[in-house]
Length: 175
Image 1 (cartoon, one colour):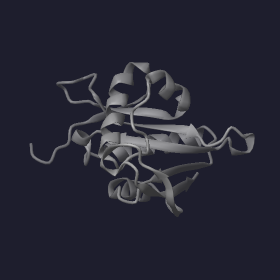
Image 2 (cartoon, helix red, strand yellow):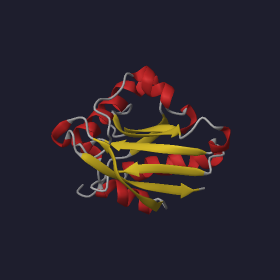
Image 3 (cartoon, helix red, strand yellow):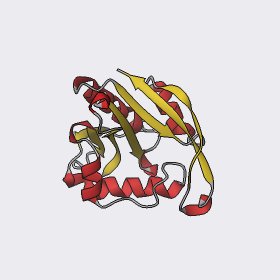
């Protein structure tokens, strides 16, 4: 039936999802508008840098794929090791190209914000390239505010923009 979107399932991210998570991450890196990273890390590095209680995957829940591939993911990392910033995290959210426009990003962001609030987080922040209109719109819809723009914060090391200085928009959501 036209207009009906397949269902999706959100689950806590585990090592079982590693291949799909890193594939979606690599796809985002390839766009040149998702991150300064030039390659997805090994799972062990990814796992160690993201808080286990604040990371989720969206899986395709179509009847033909009950376990489903990873459509997208969200994860939070601490912004500082200092105790006074224990309630401040940085969110990373990636949706595979084939799953965009299905509400995957919003479902993942809502799951992260819910777990953060229950987990004692008081601020979720994100940095987004100003050219990434979809991500900026998602953050605005989820209640993030623009804190400011960090101009020429870093250079791209890969892709067609290698060597170019990039700005990022700093966003935050207070819980």
